[in-house]
Amino acid sequence: MSEDSNILTKNDSLPAKEIDPINKYTALFFATYHHVKQIPPDFYRLGIQMKGIVRELDKNGKIRVEHLPAYKLPKILRFGRSSKAKDFLNLRLAGLDISPVGIDYLTKDLRIEGRPVVFSVVNIVEKQPDIANADLTIKKPLRKINLNVELIRKGYARVFGLDNYEHVQTLQFNSNYSRLITRLLTCEKVAERRGLGLWERTTWVESFAAYPATLFQIIKQSAVVKLCV
Image (cartoon, rainbow, N blue to C red; front, side, top):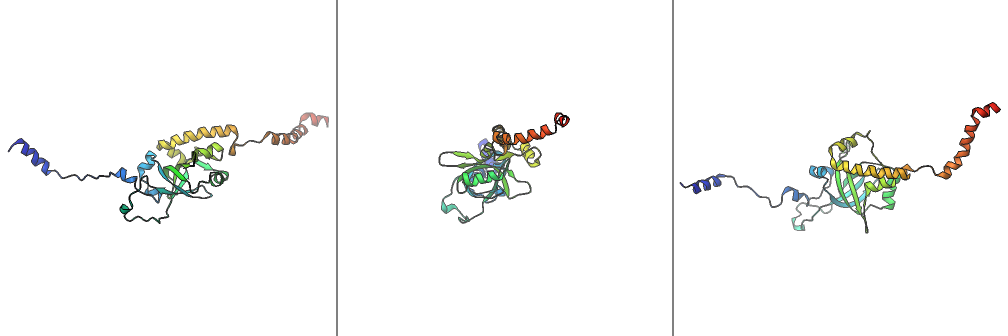
């Protein structure tokens, strides 16, 4: 038997490989997620951006987002999909301790409900497995606004401190989160230096009004006054 025929025999004995025309990563961009646990781990690890629409914001800062797939499948291929599904992703702005003023700002000033949003998830909140920390950017007619940065820049939120265990753990193991926090801390320093929002200082008028009373107490308790009396 010739060498060519031996090669042919060996090749014929190998099992045929099934080639998937759409690999698993491509297929993910056609999927719609209704719960944060459905989002693939690679999306958390790599900070892959997703898009959606803000549907609700509650007083605790939880943002409910309707996820939209990156690419829509033709209707004929949407097997078993319900267009009436109302399960939204529960998200929280990553790294932020938001003040009530910050919640009002998102609701009344930015009016984020109903607006398109681009977001990347960081991790699932510890002890709250139905909520994910996220980096969110809303789309307005003339500009895009990163909500995490905006609240810090206005002084309406603080970056979590090192006493927050979950925050520290995420910093150590998620490079995307570390970069976000570095950016937020820079904005926080500017807000603090300018006395914005939570960092607002007493105005000079208030200080001047309080000054005479303070001065009177100091003078009254001084040794010179006591000696004269």
